[in-house]
Amino acid sequence: MNANPLSNSTPRSFQAARPRVLVPHARPTNNARLHSTVTYEELPGRLRRRVTLASPRDADASAGRVSVLSPVGRALLGHAKGSTIDVALPLGRRLSVRIIEVTAEQLEPTDEAAHA
Image (cartoon, one colour):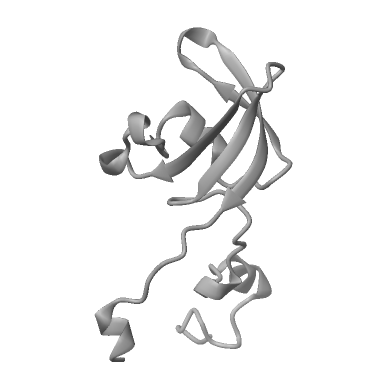
């Protein structure tokens, strides 16, 4: 038997378990992720909020940047426009929100990328 676990003689069950590599352009851009700006409305009150999902270090509620580790940030991650989500808040409270819009941050090319 071949000792190389990646050879063609590897059982299919092992091959299926190998991780897939996703190239950046294949990621869905309509789902909320780090640096996305998300507009949502609280239900049933319909109060609208617009936040940018930020790293904990860059979070600043007064500037509209919420941490991806906060209850709202964790709940929004991975969801798209039209999703209705229940957010678990401190002290056992719950909040339902509906996502109105998700906008991905447009990254500027760096000097290194321009010279590559």
